[in-house]
Image (tube, rainbow over the protein chains, first blue to last red):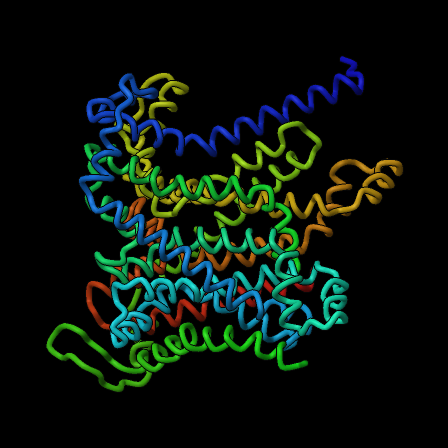
Length: 280
Length: 288
């Protein structure tokens, strides 16, 4: 069978589309199924064979989760802690990254040392952190997790921002300094605004890392400052089909902020990964 | 003028020293003591290297779970990378709707691992889970496959879930890497009559090495520490088939409350991670 180049290209493209569609289905299936389950009533998910599209769309699960359980409080804690850690990591990390990117402060060792902090398994840091925070009276408070999360958000922020700063041509800062700005002022007023895409990407990743974290949360907090991840873990021990509805609803509530954020950054994502990560 | 550059890094260094390094050093000191929180003998006592000796000689489960972790890491990383590479190559073509694909494919990566574990636990359910349902349609007849009940299957199921979640990461980084490669070498190679495989091997692959380094390092560090989603998916079971080293240390610490011993276990894990990461870093840097 003789295939003209045009036909061949058409066949290739169709196959590519098919594979990509298949991949997307596999990628989204678990999430979509959970979404569907979250709107089902008990009769419909505790059933064999499983029902795919609920006949009765019911918000009873969400109602229960939001108003009859402490989930709302946990969600709020997650928001507060993730936001604060994100801000802290950027506030400390941006100047450091700038200094390293522009002036090579600390040579090769400093960036490597900063990055190495991310190597530590949480299980190694969590026990001593627990004792430290216990002495400081910080157990089950927001600052406990905010500080703990910054230990891995900060290295990440520094590492990623170094890449972005290195991409920025020096002309802008130098022009500002010639006009009389101090180094610090030019950093604040010229460099930072120019690096906004990088800051946004880094900030959102820090937020997501904090939002998704589990081990520190479960050990360093109890009921007052617990994150939504901690609350979800409660369902692990209680994993009967009859609570699947609540579990799905809670999972979706945990997931929605992440989906929104990742759509926001998908524009910057590929670029962000190139510049930040590959620079090393 | 040099003041700014030093002032700029000081908060970072101070913070990391205080919150990250200091606790680590403190716990190192603890590993040389026996510190029981429950039991006949509570309180501190200096015992030198005894904790470490016990781990090396008497703690079979430590090494078994470490082996499980390494197996899971190797299997997962390889699968993620290969599938991610395939996806990146497909996505690198000029097709319409590429942005939609990348947006959608990125979603698994963003899922909270705790949520991933719980969702997949529902999916894998023998009786009410949709996976068996779909398979039943294809295999003609309902089969109650115990994805999480059977020990060998449980390991595979954990691997599949992990690959599901993290392949997009490799795909995106490799895609970024591919997108950065200039056109000219490709065009000259095609004019010279090179096959696709040759083009890939001699042009794409070398240029991708920085991206490969990033993926291997980051994933290696994360996979060795795996805890959250496995805890939710199987709680390390059945038996200890899917217990990773972090899960083992955690469960044991909160069962026996021998803080000195648990800290020593954590330290050995830390050493393993640092060693492996450094080895890979050296190997990959040499190839770049």
